[in-house]
Amino acid sequence: MEKVHACASDPDSWHHTLDQIEKSCRWRIYLLELNTDGRHTGRYCTHDDASSLIDYLSSLSTRAGENSFQFLLREARALFPYSRENLGRGKIMSFYGTGTKIHEFGIYPGYITLLNRNSGRIILLCCLFISEKDDSAVCREMLPRFERLSKAMSVTLDLIYRFEFEGMRHMALHALVQNRSQSSFLIDTDYLIKVSTPACQKLLSDGDVFAKEEDRLIPLRRDVESALHFVCSDIHGRVNAAGLPDFDSPNVPPVEQSLLLSRADDRLARVLVRSVLPEARHIQDRSDAFILVEVRDQLELSDEVNGLLRSCFDLSEKEAQLAYFLTTTGSLTDTLAVLGITRNTAKTHLRRIYEKTATQSQLELSKLLHGLSGLL
Image 1 (cartoon, rainbow, N blue to C red):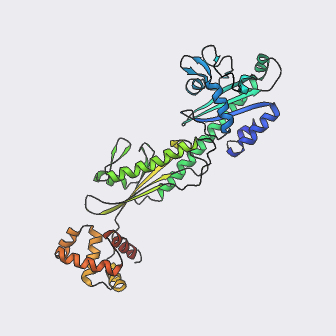
Image 2: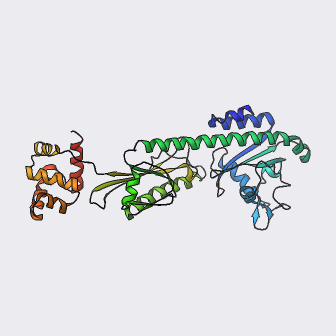
Image 3: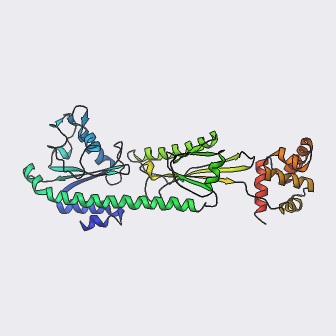
């Protein structure tokens, strides 16, 4: 029991602890972590061992339209020891094919119980008692030990998941705090807002990029909605892949989408959308991941950047002014009004600006000016 409880602070020792229990007690142990839809995650038990047990449980009919495995997932009482004889509500009838190998659960006495059903995970513990004695006598003898082990493992697993959730929460909050000067949202895959920075209040009141319905973040731009959908799809793909047998999760970095868009006041803004994923283990459920959404408004440019444009790129005074005001306003129309020049004159200046600065668009020119401003 001490070794089981010690697994709370050292989850990697689970396999060694289970091996020790099997050897000392002469038990056969299956510890299955499942998603809510019944897919095995492979965390504590191999996919082959889990599949054989799940197949056998699925072949046992408890009542019309439901098998024993479905019963354990949906209706079983937590920490109640189910045996072959009392599993489910009715008499068990096995439809396991005569040509199929019977699982150990159909041969040896033993119990299976539900340890945990929360946080998107279902944990089943199955212990089989390798003995030549009468099945009922062995079950009665081993029941107290099985119940103590079940309770200890349930408490330990609950602590592990709590620690992991807090670790994910701290990691996500750390990512958010690093961007506290910007409008940043931390949301889940259903777009529910978990945390937001103070700057988000003004962004939402502007109503040109995002809105808020109750606690849900609503994208108001089609390109922003597509970026969010892309990141969510990547998270769903990782969850589905984690449920495949023999899946070895590669070290794939989080997905990020970056958009440059024009705000309602014609100022440029950048929207960054990226996934925040757990680092210590494979992602098993959507609740393991968050999405960080940042809206970075256009920064103010120093007046001194005009001098850098003229000295570094040999721009004339009028060309430097055009480049500066075009970047700060984000609008050619507003720039024409400020400088009092015609559109044709502006296009002529702009062509020379692109040639001298080796840029090809207003976006590239804007990046250049902001980079120069950072030197001042």
